[in-house]
Picture 1 (spheres, one colour):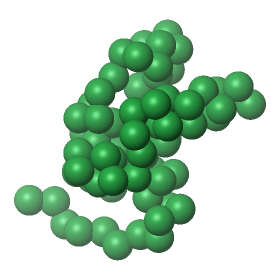
Picture 2: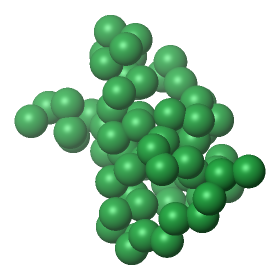
Picture 3: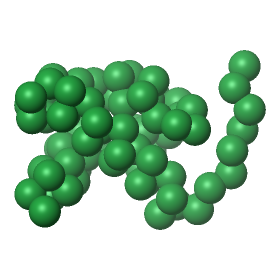
Length: 71
């Protein structure tokens, strides 16, 4: 079992977005190529699917990734 890591809301959101951006880049920029489960597994420190769901709807997360990639 993974050790719990306490983070601020902004820090946890950043972890989730970075994981989603990495998955998007790995799939040639396609934001529809991953699921919450994929994002949760990619997060470091480990994050549960429910935590990803708590912080973002899928449209919100995909939009956040688009914003990051547009920079």
